[in-house]
Structure formats: structure tokens, C-alpha cells
Amino acid sequence: MSVDKNTVVKIAHLARIGVEDKNLDAMTAELNNILAWIEQLNEVDTEGVEPMTSAVETKLRWRQDEVTDGGKSEDILKNAPESECGFFAVPKVLE
Image (cartoon, rainbow, N blue to C red; front, side, top):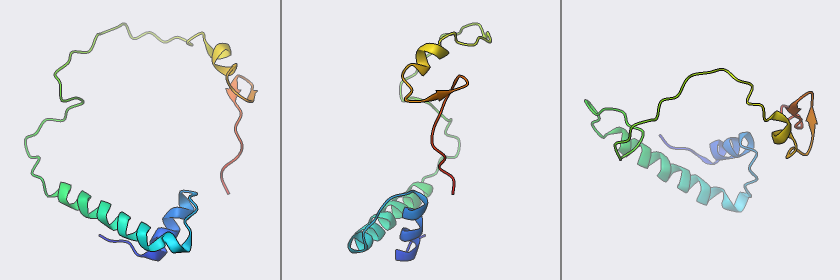
């Protein structure tokens, strides 16, 4: 899989990243290199390899699964620039 300049422009727009026209060639090449590397990873035979979360064997500590409200919403909302009805208030980002 590879991308062209138009695809890079579309990706940049969707990601809300400003890419100048003079940087499109470099960005296209970089994305194509990343995609080529991912294609190489897809060629690796992982049949029979167990999924893992860490390279080091660890045991998780078990705890009771209890539902609580956390009791810290007021402390957390103190850090918010704006809050409303007990939640973070953020500007609308959908177009």
C-alpha cells in the first residue's frame, strides 16, 4: 500500500494537521516508508505465538471488583479550566 499527495492532504485535514505544500513530498515519502515497514511486519509468522502485555513475566495483583463513584470528582474538576454539571466542559470539535 502506498499513499499519494492527495491522500496525505486528506489525512492531514482529518488529523487537523497543517502541512505546507513544500513539505508534501517529504511527508508522502515518510508515510510510504512507514507503510512499507508495516507490510514487513505483516510478513512475520506469528502462528502459535501467545499474546503478551510485557516482555517480562509478571503476575497481576488481584483486588475485589467493587463499584464506587471514586469520590474524587470535585478534586479532579478543580484542575479543569471549565466544568459543567460535574463534567469537564470542552469546546465542540465536530463540524
